[in-house]
Image 1 (cartoon, helix red, strand yellow):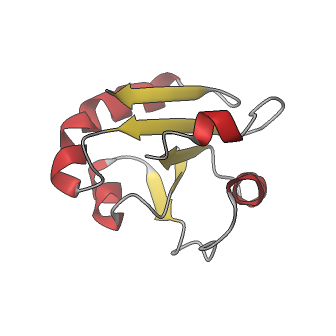
Image 2: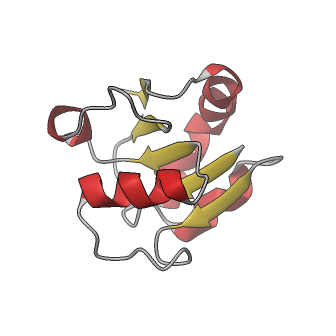
Image 3: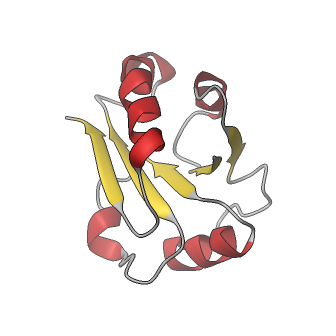
Length: 107
């Protein structure tokens, strides 16, 4: 699966998502874009999932008719040590998430 990882997620996190092609927003040359534009460009580039820790994302963006899914990772902070315990749940979600869906991982 082709995953775009938001700027607010540490770039090292992508190495935890084994068997998936992951790029961070800066690596994809998309840094600084607003979420709506970012999703549109990500879709055009073939990304299937956008991974973020932005809790407000679900209230800001509609995924109706979109060809991309969003995975929102909720953790104590965006520090890698707080995110890593959620990797198994992320990998499980990536096996079933569909375009246009928003899934939340963590509390």
